[in-house]
Image 1 (cartoon, rainbow, N blue to C red):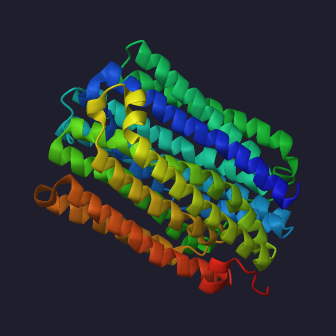
Image 2 (image 1 turned 180 degrees about the vertical axis):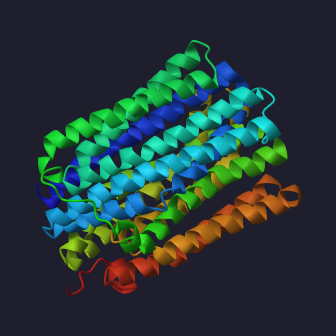
Length: 441
């Protein structure tokens, strides 16, 4: 397949993934409100926030290894890609075990200290929920290595479709269990069963469609962790910053204003992040092609991919944010069926935050796809931690809107950090980037 064909296929696959993401949120959020109520739903969100921080337990080795495999395959080094692939599985197994141990510690802390407080979920049940969510994170590390295998083999679209089919089945199971009146533990059990099934299917299918990745007796690279430590630590910043940015506000607002405030914030944020979800389709589609271009030394193609994705992102973000800003009340009423769940000022702030985030994320892909994201990762964690820390300290004085101003400022700061780095990494200049002119290779 050509570069264009692979990107088009990946766009279609990622579009399916975003339909699953947005559809799941639009379907499940009103079901959670209707079947559990705002208080219990808010407590579920609080418990879900705790294991989210465990996604960084692999120190970013999985993501860095995925890039390395794709760049090696792009350069024709299949044996090197095999060695990285097998080494990544060893890392996934080790960090999976570590994640389970950390999950046990979190579960014990919840059971013995009852922190955070969940009046509608008993301590033992809450502890089991936390442990199950941690186990799901542990299994996700292996699923991620299989996903990297699909990208390395030039079958990125196939891997995306398989992964998102698993998410669709999980959402369907959640909806059915909620409709039947089941509680948090039943949802966790279904989630784990489906995750085991996904991993089993990935293992068998990838062996069939990409036999060269599993052929021969190429050993796992023994020095994989040492060689990829620098880019992997930077990748570790991604889930850490993501957890801080996505789960941090929930913890801050939940501690200050309770479960109902968290439920409203979560609903408005789900709506506001639709533009971001759309941009994720494009970013995930061009990522492997940027890795391949960099591995092959084709900097002109790398610059072209960056410029086009950035222009498309800016146009779609502006259009979608304006649309949601104007139609937010109507959409919320049709979605949740209750006008009192709509907060205009909250939605507008969250749209601004999501819009700026989507724009700088388009440039961040250049750095992430080529393992040159160290400084960006440090800046991302620093800005997210500063925003959450400052907001947590001042929430009693500045209220929710003041906290949102802090979050928006952090996103604007990231735009001024990421874009110059992406231009340097691709050998581009700001003037040529804005005009769209091709620089010499």
